[in-house]
Image: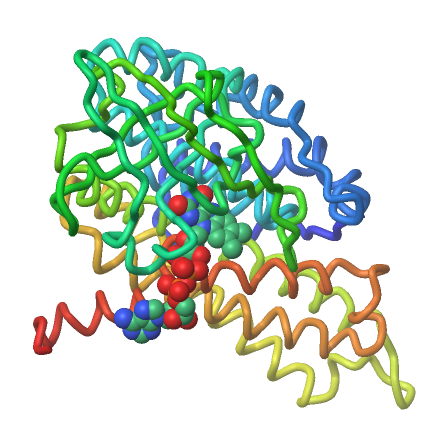
Length: 390
Ligand SMILES: Cc1cc2nc3c(=O)[nH]c(=O)nc-3n(C[C@H](O)[C@H](O)[C@H](O)COP(=O)(O)OP(=O)(O)OC[C@H]3O[C@@H](n4cnc5c(N)ncnc54)[C@H](O)[C@@H]3O)c2cc1C
């Protein structure tokens, strides 16, 4: 069972009582519904589908969806807090929720009234999970290289291609997917929202991964899938820009996931350093251990501040892409680094499945890769200072 200490008082972060309530509720649900099972789910690579109905009942699956569509109408800081608290217990559940809410936000911001009516209530209840399909085998960081096509045929589009590593894809009821409707480059790409039950949508391969074993990652083939023209999400030819804006919000979610993993590493390390003795003393009395914990706590604080700032900027309707990139870069680097330190603090026990830190160590790495690698975040940050020189 995961060891999670009571959440720190977040007064110093200037959160509202509503935001603190979301964090508290998520912590309670995660402790009740996930913590008793996580070791087994991780070992058996279980995607706990029924969990998301429970998160729906708790209001988390529609956290940022307006109340008129059955959501909780909360803000992005709350989104970040919910993802963080889930990640503290299970980073897989955290990314499931983060991607799902990212697509809910995309439908809210880009969708027609009909699309909002069709999808948002089902997303909010947890009845329907959402997925995002941009990456292809030869188009990852360079998303504009994507080759899947959508050809117009009367009042329909015919979708053809293969998308790789879609989080939630095997269980999703709807997927936001990007296809080429025009010529080469970014301007030829359009976004669609597609029901996964459509004929020709085929889940082809479940990916085996280093970590986040409770999240579902699949390849999806689109074999001449016919969708009505009103499955376009946003305007034709604006799909790549829209997808990248969607990912900007998603990056706040992944940064929050990294913060949750880091918090779990700190919880476990503090507990172990007080309990484990060597040379007749608790190992926390040795500077070599205590200083690792001090640095972990400091980086956790810094990561939180960056994540909450990025989310607050988004809530205020201000430019937040740069803040989101900085938050993701810092939080993911810190999570990967300190997860390794947490294993080190646990010594041999840290390398075994008896303690949760080996899972945190495996889970942390992905936060540096998906929704824009650390190098991509560095490109965004450097360009904001230097412009595009090359
Ligand atoms: C578990 C998992 C879940 C995922 N979920 C989704 C999902 O739900 N939807 C989706 O669409 N995708 C998803 N992805 C894909 C993910 O977003 C990509 O893997 C990621 O964007 C990197 O692309 P790539 O793997 O093709 O690496 P590449 O782009 O081939 O990069 C390889 C390396 O080169 C570096 N690099 C590339 N270009 C540059 C450059 N210009 N300057 C410096 N360095 C560079 C990268 O940073 C990286 O280190 C998922 C991936 C995984 C592993």
